[in-house]
Image (cartoon, rainbow, N blue to C red; front, top):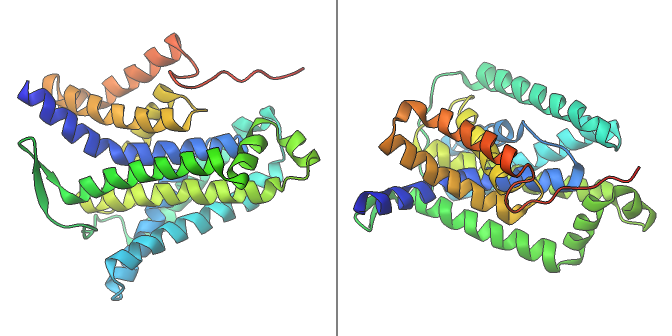
Length: 291
């Protein structure tokens, strides 16, 4: 019983990064119908920029917000230069997906050429450790969990009560009708990409502090974030966050009771099973298109 409790607590802490990435993926998808596979690499690029700023003497707290800003600006640029020219329509979903995959590969190559592929140590935002129910957890992970919960609350408040957030929801449901009503869908898309990529920067900032920073650090977390998205639902923001935390717990339990070598296999199996049982995810909804 003690092992289960410790694994759950540690899994929730680990899943905070997956939850942040998953929330960013869903925000962008809900607003622009684009599955952004480059979101993890965007956050990694911003974290490298933060590392350079820290090396230049910038306080780590300031570098943290710098990473969010850099990721958001890169996200806006990607949306305006690569995604927006594609226009609208379900037939363009696959094209946008391929473009974001290519963008991620270009970012990885650029980071490797500029900063090198050797893992670099990264300082934690909150140093130290704490005992939780007999489990030693870094304060950095606790901070990441708190940020994930705050981000979820902020996004829920923004999209539920703020006029511009409600406009973003309307634009996501029917972009053509939103434009006919005078909503600035271009501005909505830019804000969505800024928010989504900014959340990815937070996730990668904390992940880098837990191990080290390299151009390919986003691979495994992004895989697990998408598992969380499919588990909770690609159209549900709360579902994506809950799914991210759930994958973190599942990952820990599978690694402890089965084998660490089969963690990815088990996570992939979860994705397949969920897609068979409920393709829209447990909290998602299937969108119906008019013909």
